[in-house]
Amino acid sequence: MRLRVIVAGILALWASLAAADYGFTVRYARLTRYPDALALTAMIDYRFSQAMIDALEAGVPLTLTVKTRIYQPRLVWDKLLWRHDLDFKIQYYPLAKIYRVIDESNNFQRSFAQLEAALEALGKLDGIVLPMTEDRFLSPGCYAELTVKLNLNRLPWPLRVPAYFSPKWRLRSPPYRWPLSD
Image (cartoon, rainbow, N blue to C red; front, side, top):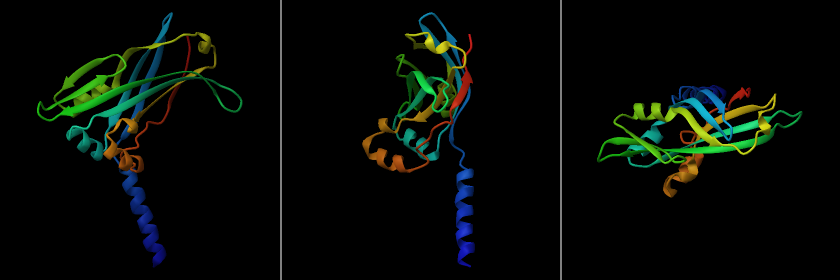
């Protein structure tokens, strides 16, 4: 009897986690090479948890960090050759009833009346210029990786501690990898 209760509890927990309709997914990413920079084009699917939506609608700004990395494959651990992080903030203004998406790296912002439109715009990265100082990582075999995560360190202090321990807040996309080519 006790085993049935434990198994039922584990199955219920697994089902609730599997049924979670939130998370981040990188659908597509590419880097275009220029003489002194790279341009990032990506499509990211953002599905916020209800806890994130509630905080956002209460006026709490949420910062999402897009991490771009370039690696050189090696036998044991791949070598990190280059990295660049981009921060995007989404904030809701209850009095104006608008969502504002801010590209903090390029000081660019847009406003939207609906959360869905704001999340869609947040997920479309079109030719964002990333500084590059060296050309060495564009050799054959190198690959790029893109991940996105909710930056918990940018949350207000009272919200940080619960966020660190809640899976509804610790959202990170699986790495999206692609080979670099000329």
